[in-house]
Length: 430
Ligand SMILES: NC(=O)c1ccc[n+]([C@@H]2O[C@H](COP(=O)([O-])OP(=O)(O)OC[C@H]3O[C@@H](n4cnc5c(N)ncnc54)[C@H](O)[C@@H]3O)[C@@H](O)[C@H]2O)c1
Image: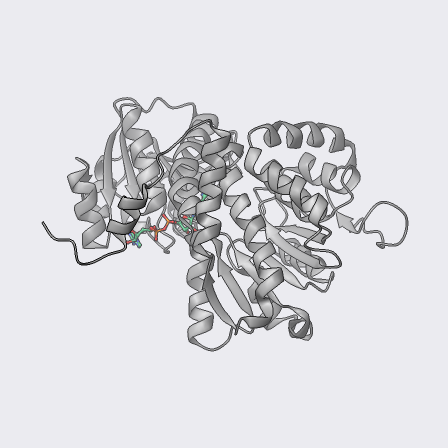
């Protein structure tokens, strides 16, 4: 690792790929900031109020230009931040370089690092001895509770960004294994209704276009999982003229998709007719051996669920007689014994971050405004919180929506006193 001690000059501890990319990275960070007016306002306020004076933060998040702007806001509020990547393929090496060399933030992230490197980076970020943690998928919190228990005493709380991480945290809390308060930022309306839906919807298709340049109009796109992400992906694919088929295991979600006019099929049937398959379930082995055996020549597979376990890549490897690596950017071609070719995007990892740039900044503005305001709330309230998983206070959610609307120049109505009274009473009938 090209690490330097924090006190050895201006450059903080780091392990990044290429310092010479710093100026390109800072231009892209500033470009993203133009679409993040809510987070910018919060940063400007933090600069004055310094809510994180003397606070150390370890963050395990996608090292993208949008995350860079969140980290800048925390730093402006007085925090010392150490950032590592929550996915080996999502790291933007220029962003990492800019954070270290232009903004003085500790970063441990290199694009395409292997599993050992990934965990070495989490450990290096934890070496900051965090008061607070930011996680995206719960790997940092998990490492803290298993391999870095000596640090647990100092940790006062943290925030979790994604659905999969929140599920893991609830399991930890159920087993009484979680030893501090974690706030489920993913569960705010201003995060999952927008980031998961519009962000994943757009950026997943962006990844498919960048990596295969396929035309979606007239194609059959199979979307596995009709949660927030699945709804976004389905809507966008349908809007581009694709025939969308949804697979689900939850009857209510399946009913919802049916009434949206989408076709629901079990994967065994969908596998035969799909041209493009997108998994967004948060579950494992959603596309597996028996499905690969049924797929058409040229089928494209992309996963946008958090972990790389939704598509059974090992089975694909075993079935293939040849694998043509990087036949297109971030696309591997698996040739089956009968000559059929199946394309896998971004090795089955988060396609929108591995083969595109992740969500557009305008939507991350809200997710990261939620993160920043929740961190401020946590810094003031952690001493009243028992270990467990907490919701973000509703006022924060509403404040982020209000600020975003204001930034977009959209006005809404205000309740009249009579309406307020009516909504708060039970006596009025017809
Ligand atoms: N790519 C990104 O940038 C991004 C952004 C947000 C969330 N995520 C991740 O995407 C995943 C989904 O998130 P979400 O917020 O939509 O979750 P969600 O819980 O709203 O939806 C998941 C859906 O998948 C369904 N499902 C579970 N197992 C299934 C199976 N075997 N076959 C078909 N359907 C199945 C569930 O019933 C549910 O409706 C999570 O892993 C989350 O962390 C990724």
